[in-house]
Amino acid sequence: MSDGRPLGPAVPDCADPREQAILAREAADVVRRDRRLTAAVATWQVLLLAALLAAWWGASGRLVDHLFLSDPLSVASAFGRIARDGTLWFNLRYTLTETLAGYALGASTGLLAAVVTWLIPGGEPVLRPLLLLAYATPKIALAPLMILWFGIGLLPKILLAAVFVFFIVFFNTLAGLATAPPGLVQVVRVMGAGPVAVFRKVVLPSATPFIVVALRITVPAALIGAVVGEFISSNRGVGYLISAASSRYRTADVFAAIFGLLIVVTLMNAGVSAVERTWVRWTPRERSPLG
Amino acid sequence: MGLRAAEEPSAATVGPQARAVSADGPVALEARDVYKVFVSHTRRSRRAMTAVRAVNLTVRRGEFLTLIGPSGCGKSTVLNMFAGLTAPTDGAVLQDGQPIRGVNTRGGYITQDDNLLPWRTTLGNVEIALELKGVGRAERTARALAYLDRVGLRGFEHHYPHELSGGMRKRVSIVRTLVDDSVNVILMDEPFGPLDAQTRLVLQDELLRLWQGSGRTVVFVTHDLVEAIALSDRIGIFTRAPGTIKEVREVAIPRPRDVFHIHEAPGFAPVYDAIWADLRAEIASGREADGE
Image 1: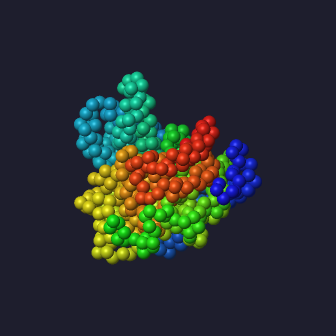
Image 2: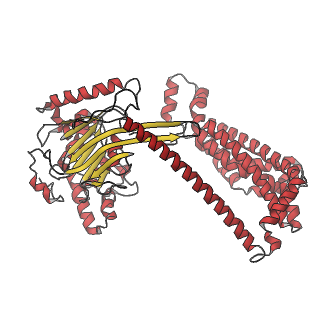
Image 3: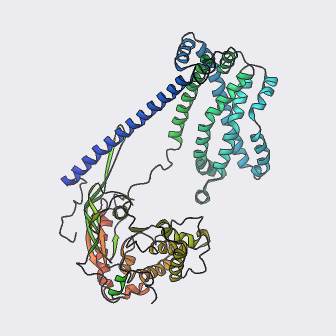
């Protein structure tokens, strides 16, 4: 440097003791900042949860009749009861089966249908109005038909859950397939890729972020389908548990069953997150700090 | 030349032929022994990186100083510190002797992207800086139009950015920065990078004509050695990453300069050769561990 200061060492990264001290200090700072952030987030979450429970507690019996709102403690004890005597797990198993099967069915057919539509020249413009209409149909209105056609077993619930998933996956995948960068397609075509290779190597990977988003947002949709199916006609499943309890004004049991459903959602979200981590690891998350 | 309409009074005291700044004039910007390190950690591993190491730099008021160096050497990091967009991990950055804390609103900042608001017309984009400082409508329109006139954009004031060429958009983004009189330090991060070679030359020429005699300080980051020489009073050369300033060299080519024939100017060859020798050492030794 022009003012005669010695230059940093050329080869080893950290030969300068000053720089080593700065790096060590920054490392400690970063750890401390992260820890403080984690602690703050946890604190706020606990506070928020406590506030919600307190509000529930406070409203119950004062603002709203206890019969309709129950209260956190009664719900906890109801949950403990149906968990211990096996009622919850028995019914949860049916709901989980319906949800998972419906989710798998809806997601795979949605994906497949989108790919086929994309592959057929002119398929998308021809099908679009029809599919938009089908998409706009209130899916719940299909529930009675499903029962009529397929009885009161697992099948109608699975199909209903699948319908809730299908359209979202279908439209998202179709949108994702359209984002394949034309430049990339041209480059691999010149390298000798045929239509199949172009699809597998470029088009489908381009769509994965869209597909992953669809898979994430359809988890609760599949659960809705299954539970609605159970509401309409069933003698097992958490939906049945809820409708049976509410018809007898056992509000605490209703809430306990709803919390049981949250177990399903949490498990499925964890699964989707695992898929997400492996499929879209290549999407950039942060810019390099260097200019 | 009619270019001086909206400039500070100090402009009159600087003759265009003279060297713009004296070597011991007042300091506009200063970096004192600046380090920037990044540490990221997961539960299992920790990664530390030094972006900038022991950088010392003074920029005189009214000076045009360029930072040049290999990719990823940290020259943009130093510029961002002057803009107050990133803080040094150690050391200090100062403007007019005061430490820069938070975003530096006394500076103008121009990057590779033109960063124009797509929903505003050319005029609206130029006016925004004045709008944010509370200048009245009539005055800001008049000032914006005067500046647009100087870069040949009259007639395009009601166009949206997508209706302009890349060079025009770049002109708008430069003018938007210059129209604000309170901005006396202009920080430019490879502003002409995405432009084609001819447009680049034209814009270098326009930038010099807008800056010359304005008394404003410019810190300019570029990869392009010829561009650096054509524009600058002094050039700071970075080592490869982790970057520090290896050398600061004067460009003794008199002003006003002809950027289109700068390579024929007396004094061009020696400074070109000297800086290229500085740079070549950094680029060659960085080849195995490319910092891109």
